[in-house]
Image (cartoon, rainbow, N blue to C red; front, side, top):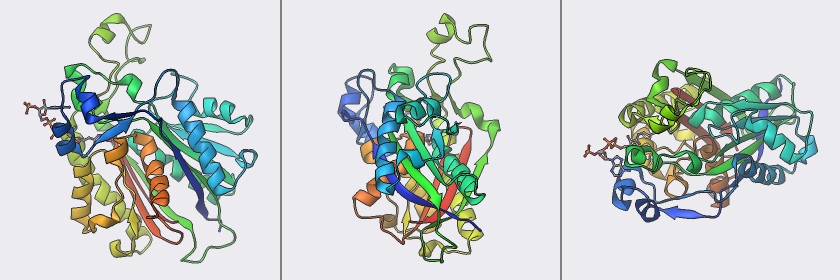
Length: 336
Ligand code: UT7
């Protein structure tokens, strides 16, 4: 049976850094509040006309280089984002044009913070069935152009950063041994009854003939809204469940995992997940301090940062889990 593995990883964040103090100069918040409630110290935001496909392109090129795969060898693109360049077509098409690889499929995934793991899951199925041999999975976001900087939006706006991360998923050579690099399994879930707990309402077909109007803009419906407490509580429950699901599926114990690369929504959520599962804190690789929440880009940025920091090495067993808008949640167990 064909199995897949991650062949390489890359990431890109725009150069401009905004500290919490920079944010406090723009809206009614403080470094102390942001740091204490979330663990965030700074985030990267784009400048000028830089958009999501630009970030995705830079991360994809780095992932290709790391995987030693040429762009002509990719046979499918899966792009996860909640902040596409335009309403349609999707990020995947714009990225494909910038990469210059016409003809191959470009699939958009819209599962927000779980988007990268959803994308990884789709790539894994395609490779396992022999449909595609080398799939580019990229998560990219430009949040900074869609945040409500008025007092009404401060609970959400301080949380998000811009960035992109990508992996190349390819087939293992032959049947991998237990200790070889491979994706063991991926697990994806959703519960749409909570869709409005974290969402952007407009523009949309739920409204009048123009999908958006001045009234919607005046009532700030084109900005993200969140019931932070509900999201927090569900995340702290679903992420440990998803990790256990992946471990049980593969007959592995929590102690066997070398590194946990979780989604980064709030340092306190990851600490609670770690506590519930009895994970020593040094095994959880957090990046929220530097990048804030970059939704679909978070996990591949985390992987790339962990490699660069020497924390993620060949042969390590890695577990990832994410939770976000939808609600959606997901996990993956893989050997690097
Ligand atoms: O990626 C998945 C999506 N996101 C998440 O998973 C996020 C999950 N939720 C959270 O991380 C937390 O709920 C937040 C960090 C968003 C908020 O933390 P909290 O401890 O739940 O705070 P809160 O919403 O209960 O607000 C506490 C106080 C309120 O003031 P009062 O009513 O106590 O006077 C807020 O108005 O903090 C105030 N507040 C702020 N103050 C300064 C809310 N946002 C801010 C802010 N700066 N940015």
